[in-house]
Image (cartoon, rainbow, N blue to C red; front, side, top):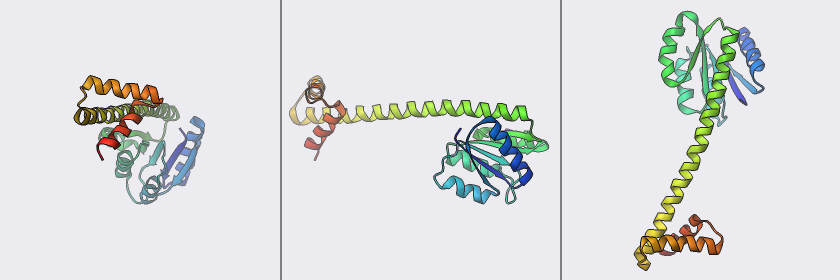
Length: 190
């Protein structure tokens, strides 16, 4: 975890949360006091790994803010609420992937929640990287297929001939099949 945003209107609670976060992770911590400031902070292209909301805030309860954050960013969200509200808020917010802990904060449970958030973040980042690789592969296949279709249409190649032609050109010119395919598309589709 590199960047954490703490949203809290209570100075005493804010310092306690910061202390707990510092005990669990070495990270940059930003602090805001209201929902409005928090929306500005997450909207400024600052990618936070974790957002901790100490509910209630001075301008709102915080659940709508938590939903906004999980909807608009990749940040994990941890919401701290009074124990009498934790079950009802937790049931609603778990649909959004928001972790709700009751106050007063149990240090052990807080540390476990942070560990869980770190583990889930690493898994999500791994899945994101895998997704990016798959998207690139799909794009490459599309481009190569477009080039094969152009060769089949304009030079009357069979699909096997077009495929072999792309592979041979890539090998002979020491380029990727995608680069050769892009060149073919430029020639025949413009």
